[in-house]
Structure formats: C-alpha cells, structure tokens
Length: 482
Image 1 (cartoon, rainbow, N blue to C red):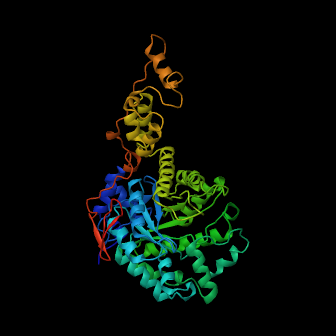
Image 2: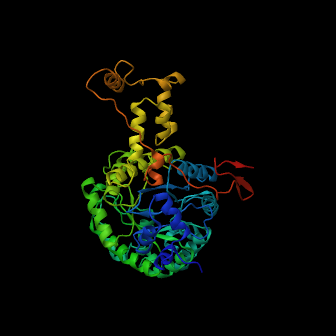
Image 3: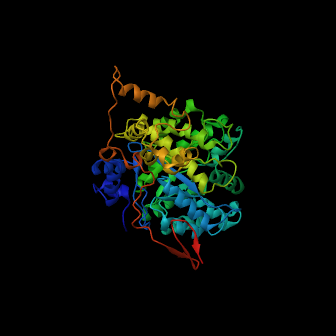
C-alpha cells in the first residue's frame, strides 16, 4: 500500500510532490520534506487524483486560498458546478471544496476530481445526511462507508467535525447564534437525539486508517465556531479546539496529514490571539480559517468584512484562507460570486505575504507600480490580479486604443494627473531626479502565487472531456454536449 506524504517525509524521502512544491514555492526540497515530516505543512495529494498539480499548505509558505463551491437542494446543476470550478481555478484558488448538498453528489464529485488541477475537499457528513434521509438515523457504518467511497473517488482532503463532543453542547446555550456550522449542527442534533458521543470522534482511529490508505489529508472541522462577534473566543469554541489538538496528535501517529479549521466571526483585536492559541494547542499544524468576519453588519459585502480578518489571520500565521463570497448568509454563489470572493482573498493572502516579508512577495507590487507610473496601460492590465476587470473598468470611459498610450485616465484627466505632472517636473531642468527602476519578475524569488498571472497550474493531466451519465462535459466552460 502506498504511504502518505508525511510517512514518506519521516522516512527521509523527498517525493515527486515535494519536488513540485519546492519548485512552486522557490524553496529547497529538503526544507519542504522537513516541514511535512514535522506536521507543520501538508500536501493534499490523494493517490487517485490524477489531474492534481501538488501544492503545500503551511505557515512557512505562501498563504493559500480555498474556494467553496457546491450545489444545494434548491440548485443542482452539474454544468453550473463545473463553471464554478473553472472560475475558481482560473481566478487563483489553491484548493476547492465541494460542499454539495443537493442531487447528483457522486457525479459532481467525480467531475470535480477529474477536472481539477488543485486539491478537492469535501465534508462527508453532508452525503451521510442525504443517504440516511434523517440526520439522527446516520450510523457509524454509514459514515465510514461514505468516507471510504469519497477517498476512493480521489478527494484530497476532508473536513471531519470530530471535535464536537457531547460535553461541549451545553457550552453553546448562551450564544446569540448557537451552532452555525452545518456539520456541527448536524452532529449536535445526532448527539442530542441518540444520547451518544459524536460518531466521528468515536470512530476517529478507523477514519484515520481509511484516510491513510489513500493519503487524504484530514481537515479537523470547527463545528462550534462562532457565528457572530458576540460568540467569538467563548468556552465552546476553545473546548472544541482543545479536542482538535488531541485529535491532531492521534492522526499524526497514524500517518495522516492534518490541518485544523478555525473561525468564523471574530473581532479584529482577537484574531492574532486565536491564531497563536491554535498553533500552541495543535503543535503548529497548519491553520485554515474562514475569514474571519470582523463585523456582522454587511450582508452582501461579507467578502470584504471577511477579507479584512483574513489578512490579519494570515499575517499572524494562518496558512490557508477560506474565501467568503458576496452571497455569504444570503444565497448560493454563482461563478461571478466565486470570482469576486477569490479576488478579495487573493488580495488578503498577498497582502499578508508582503507584510510577513516572504521572499519576493512585494516584487509584483513594485512591477505594477512602475507600469502605472510609466502609463504603460497594457502592462498594468497584464500585471493586475484580474486583468479582464482592470481593462474593462479603464475602457468604460477611455475605450480607444489611443488611450492605451495616454498619460492620464478619466479620474483626473490630462491636466490634473499627478503622475504626469511629476514626470514633467522631473524631465525639466530642475532639482528633481528622474525615476529609474525596473523590477524583473522573471528573476523574482517569490512563490508562484505571488507573481502574475493568478490561476497558473499545470493542467497537462486534466482530461479534455469526460463522460458522466451519457453526457460529455468539458472543463473550460462546464457546458455539456448532448
């Protein structure tokens, strides 16, 4: 049976996945191996995910971004899901979680794994609910069956809410928003109705055996995460975190890679303390945070409220950020929402990497600033996080090709453009020296996610098309040809 990345790293082996990660991160392969061996980083890399371009999650590497996609009971369209997957990869997601709860779950998961060059994550409890019809009717055997099947399909990491314990539930009684995690609420209901301990906790060692057989990374879910600022950093959240620390060590002992999920909704002044606490309790296992949202007042703009918290979390040491879209709390995201959420979170991740002094991270900023000062509009668009959006906004008011060489934009116009005025002053015979600087991004030490373009993955192993249920699907558009 093939060993996991952490087992092979402990044995002193630098795997092909580690070599690829080292190339993408501009780090030494031996450093990558040590980080994986020590549990400080994970390389989600299911043996059966043929299209995968390996990546790494850890605080010593560039900050990663996850995009959640998935259908719901009211919206189950495989075409739409593939379009969301394509948008996520194109706009720079480092991993994608399929949170589907609607119809055609197996087919959706199969298509995502087949087409995705980035790791795919799932939450097995969702499928278990669908198969049992009633959450309280879920059995231990059903949970293990679902987890094993998804592992066999090629899923790279799974959220397992094993830290929600029977004794923790009374701690949530004084909250404003109770239990807001879908997985957490399902398991709390199961525990209450059956009067038994969380089945994911009870069967955790068996779950680890399944995940180790396929090298599925476990993402220890925060089922008691706070759903509003008032509930942040409370007894329930930290009681679960203590359990996640114990489970981290159990999984490591069984050769399973581990990352730990975190809140949620947290006031900005508490975020760094939350990160520090997780790193201490979980012995440095990578921290994967949702946001956090730093205010609760902005439905429709929670990609912004959460990106603010995400930047602070990453600056403090969170390894991966789970994006939030403008539809958070309001509805199922579409492909455009995926784009907006990823833009906000790529900005958050990059800003944190710059603040943390990652090698070469600021080179991208410097290169774009130089293009902006020189009025090199085409290069400025090419260097933008979202080139299509930057060009579109510019061309709304100055669409002609001649304006791609203009020394102004429509915000200030030619007369009041500060950079034009500054350039003219420096070109004149005066005391102000001309500015001369050029950043060579090709020679940058930055990791791949910190140089343009975003969404650059090796797609050589992604198939041109697959057939599901007699229908042919293509990865570029997600459209089906009958």
